[in-house]
Amino acid sequence: MFTALKRLWARCSGRNRVARFDAVQDWAARSGFRFRKAADGLRFEVEAASGGKTLRLEWGPSQRSYIEQNELRMRVDLNLPGSLQMLVLTLPLMERLESETFERYTQDAQTIIDMSTPEEMRWLAMFPKADLSFDKALRARFGALGANPAWALAWINGPLGPQLTRAAQDLIGPDVPFVLMTMRGRIYLRMQLDEPRPEALSRCLEVFDAAMQSVQQITGEISPNDAEWASTASTSWQTQLPDDEATDSTRF
Image 1 (cartoon, rainbow, N blue to C red):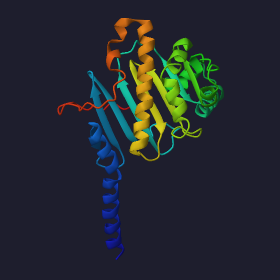
Image 2 (image 1 turned 90 degrees about the vertical axis):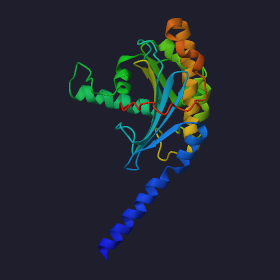
Image 3 (image 1 turned 135 degrees about the vertical axis):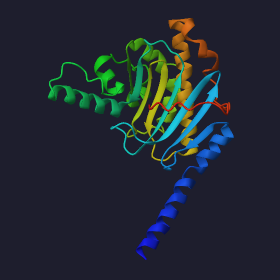
Image 4 (image 1 turned 180 degrees about the horizontal axis):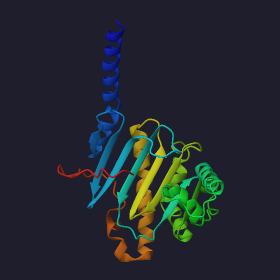
């Protein structure tokens, strides 16, 4: 009898895992995105293309120690200047990572930063912070820094700022780890998201799109040659990927 119950539970669990992402798959289909579900039923990928750029969204088990359980990851390669290294994160997370980084290097008496440490932690020890005193709401919820703090300030002072303020009202609570950064020519977003509700995914896309628009303004000031993607940065990402588009399996 016990064996029969185990089999029944396995079948029910399998059906639940399959049905878990039905709403997300429908949302992706309506938006013209490509949806892929992992065989284990624990993860999925969504891809969208526009103007020769591919945006990738993933949801599944966390890849960072500071995010518990499940996380949302987004990235797009915009061929940004390599010097454009900027980071925006929720203030409680910034304070937590600063404390962990300090303890790690003082306790171990290290004088060289461990390159295996995630960039968002290393940058807290390397880069100066941007002054967000111009906006009390943003300053109360987020921190920003970068290799050039003026660029980080310009990034959050563009279309990104209002979207972050709006998202902080319900999507990105004080206890929600959230990271947005530019490096290696890409924009990355990473945040804790327990359940991938289509409404939450849409809101995250709005924040990500605003980040792209803000970067457009910065790259326009740095070098026109590094902003070829600018004309498509503010798209709503509703272009279906070609059927033969290969999936980039590189981990975030």
